[in-house]
Length: 77
Image (cartoon, rainbow, N blue to C red; front, side, top):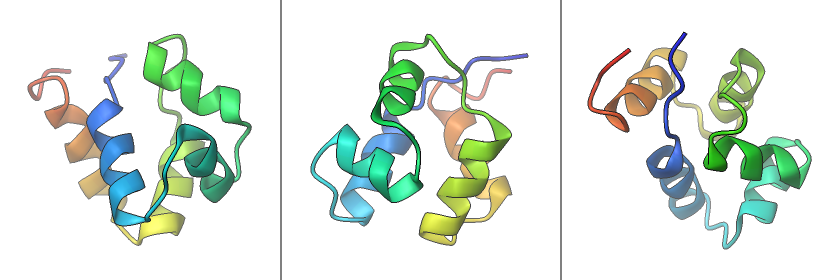
C-alpha cells in the first residue's frame, strides 16, 4: 500500500470550498479535526471513507481524487 502525501489535495479542497483551515475542512468532511492533521503529517493514510467524503463534498469522481493523490507524489504507487 502506498501512503500519498495529500497536502496538495487538501489545499485544493480548501481553496475550492472557501475553507480557511484544516479544522474547517474537517468539519466540511464530517471528520474529527485530528483526522486531517494526522493525514497531513503522514501518521494516517487517506482511507476509502475519506475519499468518499471528499467525493460527496466536491462531486469529484473517486478516480479523479485518486489521480490527484497519486500526483502529489509523482504518480508513484
